[in-house]
Amino acid sequence: MEVQNLLQWIMIALLLVGSYLGVLHFLAKQAVAQQAFPVVAGILLAIFGVAAATLVYASHLIGTEFVLLALLLLITLLTICSAVLYLIRNFRELNLGMMALLLVYLLALAYVTVLSRGTAGDHSVSLFRTDLVQSTLRSHSLEPVKHIILNMALFTPLGFLLPHIDPETLDDPLYPLLLSLSLTVLIESTQMMLHLGQADLTDIVANVLGGALGYLLYRLFRRLGFSAEDKDD
Image (cartoon, rainbow, N blue to C red; front, side, top):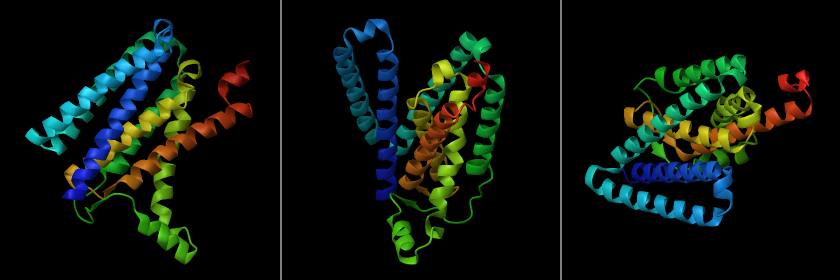
């Protein structure tokens, strides 16, 4: 239980840091905030510090698991509302084909990571799977880290498809990273709470790296002139 509690707190910390960076990135693009950005960043850091202290206090009252669940629900709700507002404002400029592919991918991701899982099997909770790296070095084979490679591959389409939807706005490495982080924490938390599989920090790192790899592939394709918007120029 101590490892599970620690993992939950790490997930909460990652969500808070990701949210802080996301809001800070948004404010940095605003003309008004740019004039006093250090002050804005400091005030925002203080607000998130108070929020973190509040979550620590709440965990003593209702438990860390419920704090994590409440934070996930809040971030999910805010993300959905932001996405809906963004779609309403920019619908005509969006690549609808890529958006459809992203929605299909997200549905497939939900099925593979949660809906298709059963309650039977290993439900262990751990942090970093250092044993996998040690096994790889001893056996000189990638088989022990196959799980990590598959997790990276699972999130690579997210980083590749997201900026294709609106290159003018979403061509930013922070967006696929934050979305990958939020989704993987949501998935790992769901698996942990519903006993649908193993939950560990290694999967979170692998998934975020997969999202980053997808964005790098997107940039590579643009540089090579394979993107739709480059062909139209």
